[in-house]
Image (cartoon, rainbow, N blue to C red; front, side, top):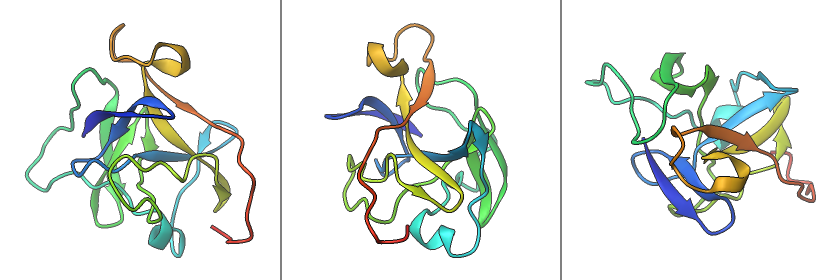
Length: 136
């Protein structure tokens, strides 16, 4: 895991390939992504040899048993990437409502700071987007 700067969201959490990382929540509670959901929202899986997951300036990372191995979490929320993000830095899944919740980019430093200073606080944020008829 690492951090990256996104032109829209500022500093965000990304996987080892630079793909934007998301959480799925409903009213602040985690929603499980299973079945067809996983085709659109692949889980972020920890490397097999890794006993701990870290990212510079980010605390509260962990793992749970997930589909395909140890799924990385932030504050117990499972992390996912979005199949429609085609390149590192893409963040097209933020605010999408599907599979029982709303997908949110994991931002570093809170909505206003945009930096990893101040203890590496990580927060999720939702932006309002028009909902298309795509079903995901």
